[in-house]
Length: 135
Image 1 (tube, helix red, strand yellow):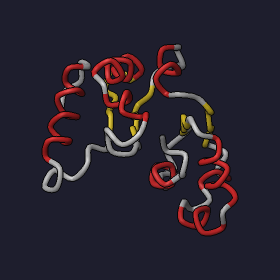
Image 2 (cartoon, rainbow, N blue to C red):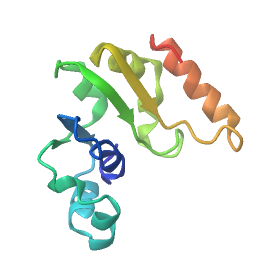
Image 3 (spheres, rainbow, N blue to C red):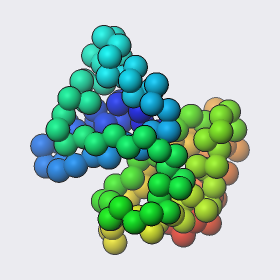
Image 4 (cartoon, rainbow, N blue to C red):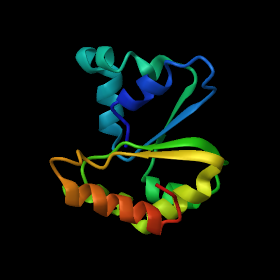
């Protein structure tokens, strides 16, 4: 996820960030985010930043390979249950994220608003813990 560049925009605001990797399954999303004037403006032209690398891949198998360790992983996905991305809310996926994180690394995950969808929130929280991460 993150192919819209919006999460990258937020991270790239910080000058001390050395590198950002966006793993996006759908190349049409990143193409739109790069070329659509309104979306490109909204994402702060994040795709022009030389610190940003885009990987066109499914994050699940991509994480199975060793790409080094990350200080932060942002899982910027649609709500679980609405798309094929549901597998990216599984304990197995979060276990792969745990292996990819640096020793003091952090995971940020979209889990929906607690007040509006508490079951979704708590299901994601339980999966994160089952994957070996603390919440």
